[in-house]
Length: 222
Image (cartoon, rainbow, N blue to C red):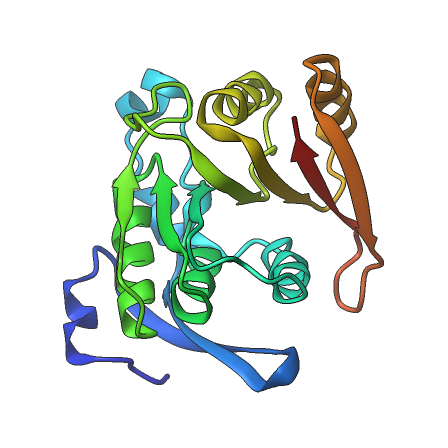
């Protein structure tokens, strides 16, 4: 296993790095936990019962790749502010921090996930701006030009908080891009956010082996 920097030992779990190669020769090296199951094993019954929280952050979820490819086709203005909802290990936030001049903020409810996100942004040469926060109680006073998320609709109970976040955090002329592998609650999310008066455009990405899902990216505007 490769090791990024000596200070990887300060991450909350033993980790190794993997390299992601994207079209055009763009690469990211990401620290990931050696054993995601071990992260789950550290969750106490009390912590779970408090909010039925599971450490989804510990794995690299599949929608991040098509979302990065989608974003690479767009010119991100340097004066934009961008917020990622549910950064997990931080691959989207790291790419934006390194490849654009936009002011990028990553958020996640999991403190340990935020630690990995901050490390991965910094390890790839970006400025880590990471906030540990809950979708239901955002600390931000200002709105953002863009909101970005991938693989965040894994439970039905998150539909309303994500729609609320978009309403609270997106500027009037802003854009939100949400990526999903068309899981169970994806149709309900699209239906409900349309009912809130948002404009929607769907971009489809056919699955490539070994993925079995067709990915969709939902562009949301007012």
